[in-house]
Image (cartoon, rainbow, N blue to C red; front, side, top):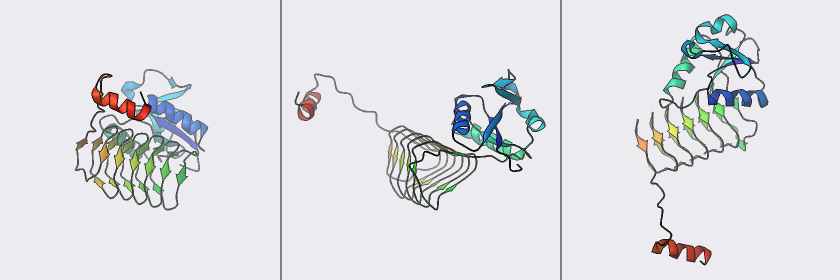
Length: 231
């Protein structure tokens, strides 16, 4: 890519639409087209821009003049996004990252790979390493000395304490909390609200306990409401 700020976005779903607006409103890049696998192209435009078949992308937007961003979700535990990331790289495209200008804190010593999608209100502390093709949805805390490996997806309001190591293709759900100095293997699924206090092996699923619901007449419910609200 020869000093060009023009990019194409791979994808035509919700993530691609969001990526278009974030890149347009808050980045030095200008989105000029979308690309999708040939079998999913049933129109010649998307969001008012050209939509091109993957097999023809180099013909219309050669990698010597255009960059790209793969904007896909965590489907198949991030394996689809990983596959398309490598396919675009093999075609010679420089894959650019979106990093919100509205971060709360981005310390020195932080490294961020290519094709990352990092939204607003993140606290990313000193010496954090974020790999390639990582998604950080809004409002996360990434503690000092932690690392997030390639193709992982972090949902909103996740707390990753200091010196954690997170493997490839993981998914961490909303409001999950990771204790410091723990290691999360590859392909791990951590559900919403989970509290992780020890190392997790490859392929594991960490499930949080569902909140207990007490009926209005339950003795504990009555005691709690009296204690906190004088009811």
